[in-house]
Length: 408
Image (cartoon, rainbow, N blue to C red; front, top):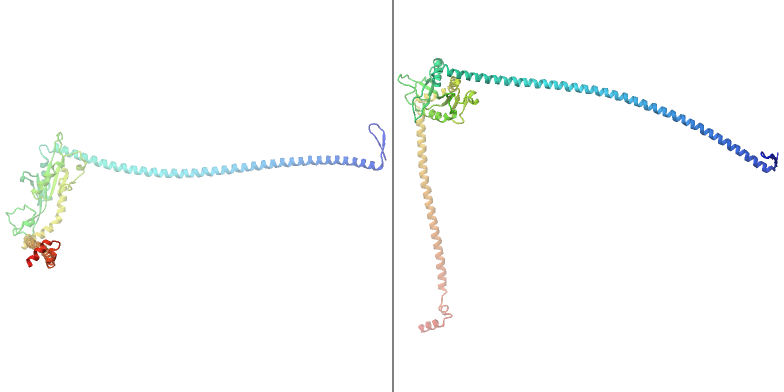
């Protein structure tokens, strides 16, 4: 038990008990370490394999999770995309509907505007055609006639029915080197009048009526001027060129209105549109085309009829010997006389006051001069009282000696 044979030389070696025990322990330790190392390596290999399997499983699960997440995300995206496309389609449809409605509205408005302008254009065309027709008539039917004759004929056609009491005649009365073409006056019966076969009404100025009252009351008067022009005339006249003369003729003939019946400025839209009021330049003046000749007389006459009652009342007051004008003249005369007397008295009063003021000023100056003189006299008197021989001879021994000698 204490011998150990060498494996190489085959010789036995004898060892003691304690040495053997040490060698045995060493052998046991080496084997244990080897076994431990083997077990440790095996354990490590198993763990590595386990870890590898776990890692592979984890990678598989991770990949599966990622795949699932990607799939879910794709599905969500597809869903969102579908919803977005649906929403976009709804919005597109909504805006397309709104645009269609707007387009319809715009189209309707365009149609309305087009119809409006077409109507206006048609009306303009009709007006132009009517004017052309009128020009044609003036150049055919009215061959040898003037615009004045045309208006005379138009008035005479309806005089008996429309204007039974009217006066419409040529103006042949030249005043200040001028006259108009036609004068129109219209009347109503005066119920307060005692008929006189020889009386002819010729004025609308009721203020001049005294005992001899007119049988008719004039309630409207118009001075007419007619102007035509040949188309090939080189020097074209304008309507405004005749306003001043027409207004002068209106005043000369004591007419209320002035109307220019004109074929001038045939391309001027202002005068082609109808009755043109030019009273901003001359009072109660109008410019018309021939087709408005009868309508404007009717229009002004109907308007003027509203003033008839007022004129009747004035005439009735005259018929009762109430001379308003004379009363006013006397009243104004008295007032003017009082004003003149007052002015004269006021002038005299002011003159007297002025004279007194001047006298007061002179007296004041005289007083100041006298007061100044008194002051100077008082000072002189004071100086005279204080004057003595001693003072006079002071500083002058020669004079003092002479005075002494004289006294002796």
